[in-house]
Image (cartoon, rainbow, N blue to C red):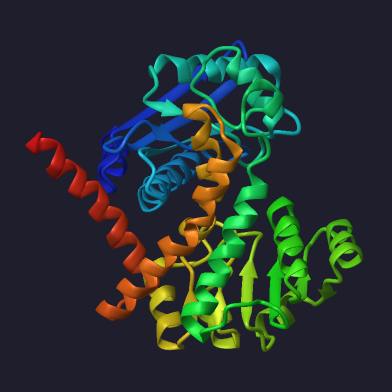
Length: 355
């Protein structure tokens, strides 16, 4: 018990909820990191964790990241996350999802859930049968639908912001962009890049996904290691995390790293400083991929597609502020983003106490 409270206190989490329902097979953990700015919104992922300890570590890390993402995105939301322990291809069922929904409902709106790894928009509908504190549902049901479309838009405008700051380039036309991973976000990102005339290189472990973007957008297939060491204007990680580490940094020849993947840096403090020393502009992942959060957050006030798109396009200006703050204080872009996110929360606490 002491160790659990040590883990919670380490990053100042407010609440951890263990959800156990033998009748449905549900074993889940909900982590609420911070609710200073508003209710904690964050996705629920389903994954076959090797141990309950691994699940706890993951949900604590992810929920803290959501606090920073919501704050830097100027949303009046806090950070939370949920994990369901199990194989989504074998263990998922209607009763399991509805049971999870009941646990979400029991929190009275302190946590709002959404789609994440191993979950789908359809799954959110089952959860919604038990609670209204869920986002990311189909448009036909009053929701925002697939968040990856606006996530990709955010990555695209964030890429343009970085190129403007780093190379003083307004257009992506003719630039060499390396994309790692062509899932939903990577696919939609390629559409934007193609429309603006970029030369797109990339790879994916899924040959079908690679064939699709090669046919539709003219993506030039490149092996994984070769892509990282290519002479690129932008390297865009849109698949797994931890792809940026001392080994890959040594081989990178790009000017900018701007991608949709979460947790791109193997060790944030170390790797962000190494990139700064190498004069590679790193666009903090939790800022550039915030479009999905902005999209589902709009459901809480009644979804408006144009408003959501406008907010996502604002990622350009959020990043410009981060880049300027980093340059003025001679710190990494990641450190700048973290400090600005923390400052907004602390400023709100001070202001609220004065009311």
